[in-house]
Length: 291
Image (tube, rainbow, N blue to C red; front, side, top):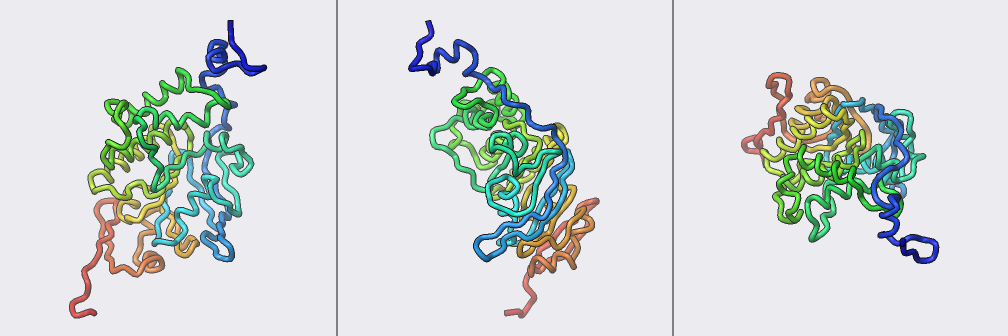
């Protein structure tokens, strides 16, 4: 006979009755384009982001580039609902500002530049945390949630690492696990803040190849920030060049990566070369005799 405390069943009793375990949340609104209009972020009197508007279509990839302090991370945090902001963000017909955090998380998954990695956590359990937005209050993961986590690990090539501690992974492996947690949310929009930060060249390509493959296969809308202009232009459909919180150019990489545009966001010595359809940004050495 089921044991209860007051009128609330214990976890064991509730599981036996079938309503505690598993994820059957209210359905999220249908996926659609990510549309941001007039996004602004302020801290006191200082404007970190001002009047930024863009659209990322289903299956599209927009990367925001700009110098340190340009407002890139603040913009992503606003879209993710983690920073107070002006303006609006929507996915399809769903206005993100009106949604409960759990409903918002079922539409938008955010991968921060410096994610918190809990000590002593297995890779499988970490990826499974992505199912939290789909669980009932006080609920536990069910068969569907476990299957989603296993599918994500297999897609990322991490199924052989499921029982390992997250802290034991290399930088590239850990970054894949962090992305895996976001993918386990099954959100149609993926936000990536500097996804290649701290990785060597090979791991940078691995991570971006993975995101590119998954956004095509899963029809994800990807919004990311990056510092490497060449990598940003090689993978994204659109680039938004940000300076002092404002967009100075937005469009396909072939149109935005110009010397005139880049001079508006950086004082670095650079030269642009073409390699097929990719614009390669070459850093130039100092001028001989210059101080």
